[in-house]
Image (tube, rainbow, N blue to C red; front, side, top):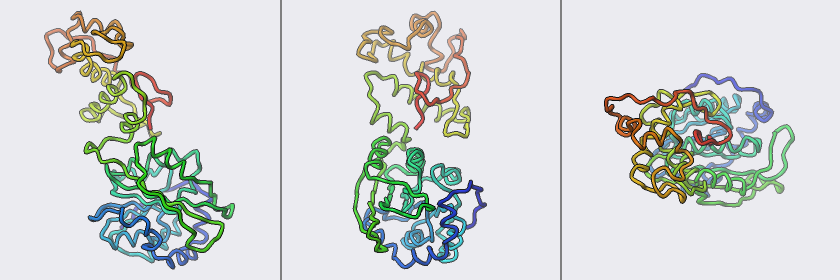
Amino acid sequence: MPDSPLTLPPDKAIAWYDGRAERLANQYETFAAGDVHAWLTDLLPVAPGLILDVGAGSGRDAAWLAAQGHEVLAVEPSGSMRQQGQRLHGDTRIRWLEDRLPALTATLRLGLAADAILLSGVWQHIAPADRPRAFRKLVALLKSGGLLAITLRHGPAEPERDIHPVSLAEIETLARAHGVAVVRTAEAADAMGRADVTWTHVALRLPDDGTGALPLLRHAILNDQKSATYKLGLLRALCRAADGAAGLAQDTGSDEVTVPLGLVALNWLRLYLPLVSADLPQSPANQRQAEGLGFAKAGFRALLVGVVSPSIFVSGRSSGRTPRMPSMRPCVRPRTPSPACPRPT
């Protein structure tokens, strides 16, 4: 199933593979995928599902996965390697796509949720500064309970291949930051017999909590220190906006979206007014109503004492008087956290 090519900027590693595609494809095909990935076989989905093979190369692994009944999206940035893969493996369950890490722009546009993602011999080509973004994109493509398998190459290589050092510790750190569990690691010698090259295999799983929670929420809940309900309240306010007013969010094209600040404030008020009015403490310093609450300024206190009726904020029904609505100026998720907008992940 052909795709429209996505024009990508030149890349040294891609050029290296383009210039050696036929030789490399023939070399890769001499090794059975089932043997190369024997460490992973029992972790793969049993029922047919969607698997992303990112950096699919000659299509050897994609064909192996397709033969097990899976639909495979073979993502490969090298045009010459894609041509070799399509020549060697014509299974209709394999769809080829031109895309690359760290952005995976074309892949994300498809709106897919994968049961598993395979990165075999790819991570070393990603610059260390780009790896947090790349990992975030991969996790965003996984279903809850989905599997992410990464193979790490250790050892020297030709300078033109643009290979960077990798480590298991780095993957474990990224996994903790995104609430992903490391379920297996394995060390292996090089299948091609290179004495100075070794491999570390890592399998990670996104917890299946039944909610389909975004990695952003999972990260905040698992890692952020909280002595009050504010951050979770803000996340709930954003989730309500996403659930009920998604059309008001605008994609900025830079891994961020803008959301009307007034919409966030409206959801915030609907969450907090009933809690604070009922004297339910929201922080160690908050014993009753607005005492000790940093966000409770004059406007919030006016709602509490009835100067402005809070009914429209709590239930959405007007009581006859129209309160002054919060400003609808955009809230841009910044690089530095603020009370109004959390840090994007």
